[in-house]
Image (cartoon, rainbow, N blue to C red):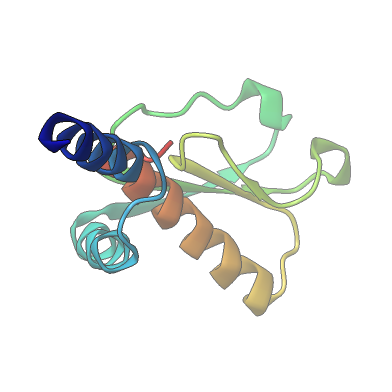
Length: 111
């Protein structure tokens, strides 16, 4: 009986680690990253496909796209680059929040 209870408790603990990160820890890390991260603005005159990120986890690159064919405003999968094409203030803020959420989840192991 004790071993079964221990196994169930261990399984619950492991599934908690494998699932979503604690919302409070996620929010706290997002705020910490927002304070510590250097934001770099880049105006791109060529195609978005030609942009090469700096791969520095301590910077967030915001790339202003000048060509509609480069696609919509978006965040890179790793949260390191935000591509903006004529965004509204609301969309821009949403993408910034998304970038920091991606970064925080990656550091907490939730992605």
